[in-house]
Length: 240
Image (cartoon, rainbow, N blue to C red; front, side, top):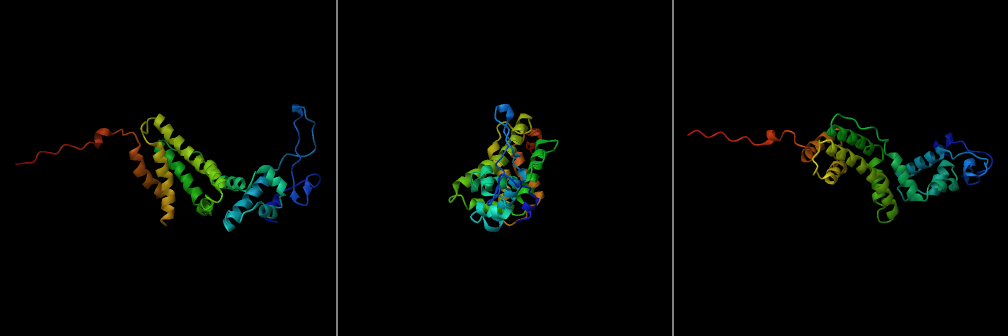
């Protein structure tokens, strides 16, 4: 049994069988007219152990080498308890990867550009966590073999990241810091995509990369409050 399962406490009466701990017995809602049944609510530690095991198995063996049987063996959690929480292997994998992303801290900054930079710092931290990029490679390798996995990955992780960044830029438009006609979708792709491109090039994705990419992208979408300063000064007449 793995270290994760050492901290799990399971009932020793009803719900425990040869396949491992089973927390299927849950109290009914008396207010709904159903009789109160013996049992206790599902233990959130079981879900945590399952997701941690899924991440370890994917990191070691890839998605193909991660199975519900292997998770059950590693955690000591029975397969019925696993299937009550997750519909299939792809559901477990993407749920694990969603949790693998660091909990998003509240963005901070006095300007829209500073808030976007704060968000990108969080993204960089998540991307550079141990196995962060290799996990992405694992999912991409399954695009054609397991399309449902790739679709869940897009919905739960990629779309979530894009929504957060898009919301920051749309708020910046409302605040008058970004042009109303700015191509927000292109800006999101440039900002997020630059991190993957930088990583795959073998160059370090240092924190200074955030300032560098914003220095290129931001002037293309920001409201120019000093338009007059950008106009070329007329040339002084040449002397004869």
